[in-house]
Length: 159
Ligand code: ASP
Image 1 (spheres, rainbow, N blue to C red):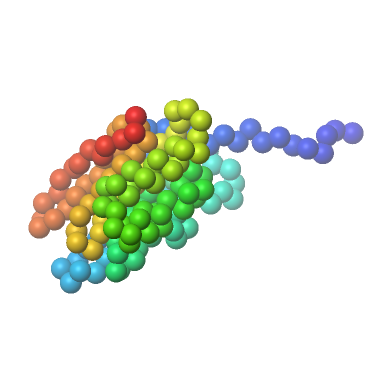
Image 2: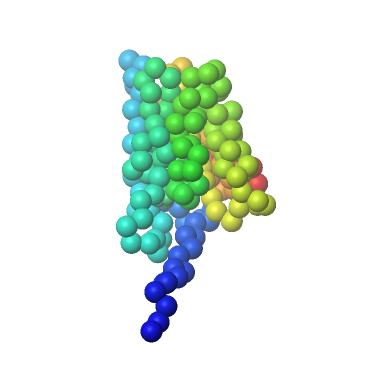
């Protein structure tokens, strides 16, 4: 009789090149915030896996009185730190969107030994329209759209 234990060879692979979540944060002319987050999830993901994108607080969080944040990259790492909620709560406590994104990445790094082989990136905006972005690895960028102009901005990163 064979073993009743089946081992999964599941190892999600997400690096600086193969994440594809589209997160959008908007501040309208009335000062209202909104956000959305859509993804195909991880390539070769385990059947039934739920990433961070559909989980409010992890892949996306919006508080109209404070700010909004969204994530891309390895969802498991974002979920473990409830990254988007963390960023909004830091902004509630006076952190700039940039510093809050950096802290959320640092939180992930603090739970990982060595340089991660996966990518996570966050963007954030506050009610004043200040924005921030930060990622684990180089190569994460976002598009800032204002007054009919779109500007692609390279995010700072930990590595
Ligand atoms: N965050 C997504 C997930 O973990 C993946 C991605 O950003 O492409 O499902």
